[in-house]
Image 1 (tube, chains in turn orange, blue):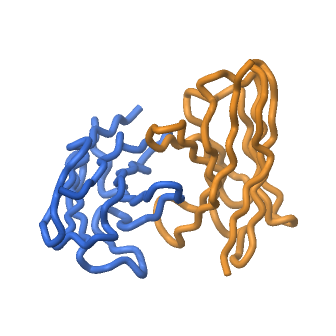
Image 2 (tube, rainbow over the protein chains, first blue to last red):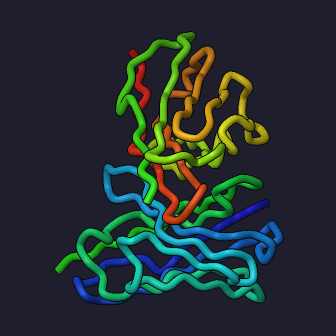
Image 3 (cartoon, chains in turn purple, blue):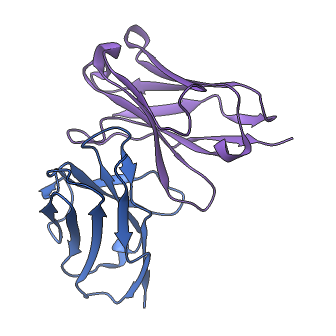
Length: 117
Length: 107
């Protein structure tokens, strides 16, 4: 069974940092591009960041570039998102997702990040 | 950056109806577009990839069409389980971008 399990969310003050993790199982994690997608409460989906297999290419949304860093550890079948200089507008449910363009459709259930003083 | 404009933002329809949702890209994206369905409290689920290819396991009442700047998602005969929010996503170039979403509600 394919599983993506996010962790690391929580309440953080503006300017603070969090590191999200996504543990993958049940598929050949190292073969696929992986993504972070977020959804603010009551709002739509927003693509945040992508990393290709072997970490060859990395991309970010303009809204997080310079503050967030995506990475992966294929030996641990894990995806990460280091989030620094957090702002209130980063408050959202963060989903770990597999390739968005095609192929298998893999999503976690999300981890909630709340940025508030 | 490529902007995706999705319409309508909400839609009321009845079981058995045929419905169409549209996404327009601010510039040509070939067929690099997917459609996703999201139900409350759940993760999104891809229905269509490369504009018109049906994701494995998705009912054939869902179909997609279009290329370059105009795309449509059609549900041929609405079923009760289809009431949800739908999003398009362009993956032609970074930053990838979702449309604003279409909430499909029961009339």
